[in-house]
Image (cartoon, rainbow, N blue to C red; front, side):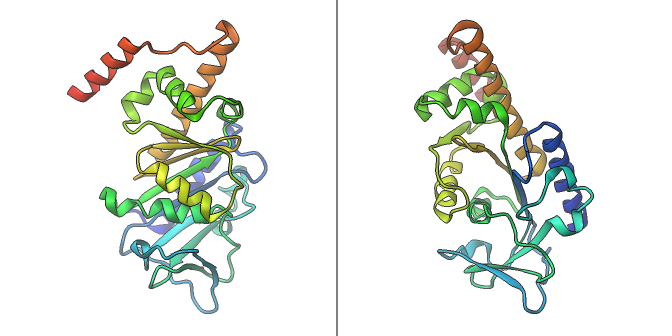
Length: 255
């Protein structure tokens, strides 16, 4: 079981990687990890707080490490002690507390809290969320094609989507960022998806560990790049044909 400092280092490594890919301009993107039960952080006296619009009782008493609002991924390794915030859910799951000496967590905290609440039902004692503004998917999702059509195109574009992302991905139409409502809709989509695309905004990956959450973001972005290249070269999306996709999925089901 990793210590809090080790998890902070893991977050900083992923943040640095995303920055090197050009997917976290300025203070874009956010990352969080729900710590296993038994690893908690005392917010101390006079903590800062965030009130939930509805209780999240399943996370009561749990601690989440989450990147701070305004944090820059390219500086995360250097600013690790101030830009990763230990947030503790209150006793009755009605809000979150963090030490007064820390900055506020990302404005997307409502999404992170609600999505992590899926973890117990999945049998996970810990979970991770990676959100970034990857360039190709931001461009691809900005068009007028219906989300269902984009989802089908992405799943056909890259065999790894079917192999490694058993639940696939989902698209959410554009919503104002940083709202509790956006988190509620995102949680709903993650009930049957490994990655969720916020159209005209970015990608979120959700898994039981940081590496896999980042993998989901990378695979989704690679698929978007392939689709844009196909569209440029051939005037439309190509990807796996029905028979090829069926064969691939049947092979996976037999493993």
